[in-house]
Image (cartoon, rainbow, N blue to C red; front, side, top):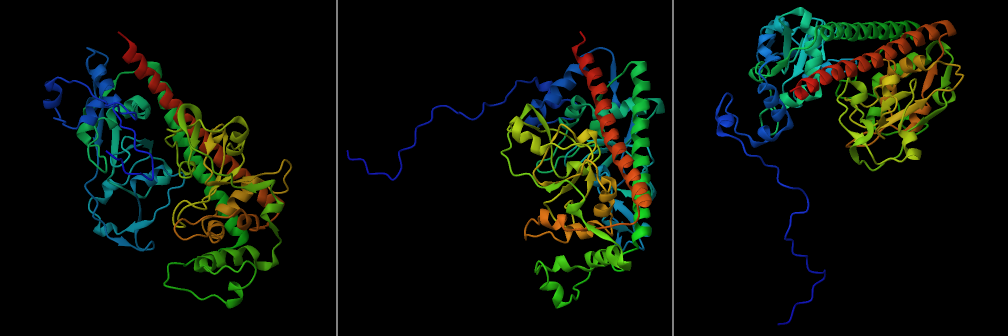
Length: 483
């Protein structure tokens, strides 16, 4: 029989599945129909489930989490949003992990039920229970007088002496795996109070309890001092430069002279001419103040090229744009695909300014971070712009961080040059051409001292977070390996 001619070669008949093997296991029915009556197969196949069973099978050394901690959350929020001058700031669950939590909503206290329960005290352990569940952090002074989302579980140790260890325990990767093995939901995962109450809790040695208490206290102290120093530096800069006279861009439209449209650069996008950026530029250049071009004050401004992302456990830790703006981010990716020569272009040294250069203008793009020791030996995404200081600079890098990162006098000037429709981008040229006001050596030095110390403290707090989770992980592993 004749075979019809084909445009392509016939497909090879597959008799085996080449991509992955089926993950399966046999379980006694008592596991499925006891306690929570969980029927989702993925929960029983998760590594955290087997770890939990290994702990429960031991006759001593552990108890239920509900025996040592009180876990609770406010009722579902039904607040009325108002303007900032009439409302109280509100933070969503993910915002409490920001280095600088910045509220985007303000709620009316009179129309917010149980609003007193939505504040958190300093030192309270907060745990995500929706989306990426099981992520813990400590409340610090940046969350004071702020309403916090009900999507964060509040955890309080019944014995205050156990607070540090309890936080360390929840940050242990093995314990988080146990928490995620209890999650439920198809698209958006959830974790309930009852799931945490039934979590196995391992009793630590006495010296570990004291060590974790010291570390957790140092974490909060470092963050609080860093926030105070940043506020001090920004207030000094604002006093010296003068407030932006108009920062309102939440209007239907605005007017700009035609000479601004067809001058140097010929930018026609409306956002480039927004009043907030214009007011910040005017404040920087007022009173015939001396200004310098940013590129003349630093060694280099650049964005590294793209690279193929291949991940594996033996690679270098990888940070994306959002993670450099978070306290103790989840570093769960390690890059394998960069050789030694290319790798150098994606690493940063402490003292480098790093700026997310891709994203929405109402999001992370244009946020300014001064890298610390914690950022070293990690691969940073190519969506982060780098500003490298000179060896003997005439202007300290800490002062430049305030010039670029100030909420009203800095960031609006940085993001005004963002171009692109779907995903705006920052260009190196626009950043290089930004004007840096000169306000006197002594004041610039005072601002730089405060900012550089602040970001060093932030990096130090991240190192402490890694340290405390490593301590807890070693205790958990030792308990599991003990016969």
